[in-house]
Length: 83
Image (tube, rainbow, N blue to C red; front, side, top):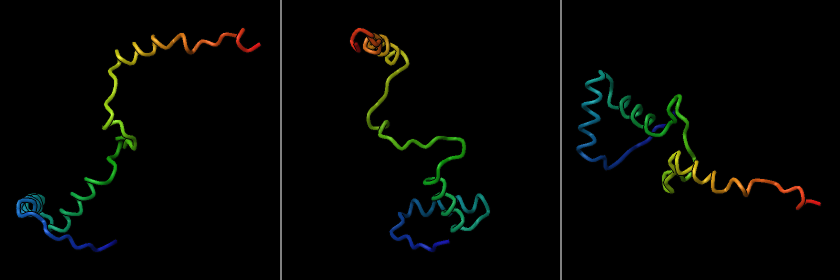
């Protein structure tokens, strides 16, 4: 286990952490470790994405289906082209 020093914690954050520690009857250190771990470790049962999809947007199912229908002809192989 590593020991780290964190500086310049905003007063509001420190108060919230202290309140969380008191509520859970644990030390501030234990609370901070739990909060950090929850923020950076993958959640059990949830897939962690490592792509840029959150920056690029996405398609609805209808948009995907429309696109697939539009390019379906491009996926057909004409055997005559391979002679």
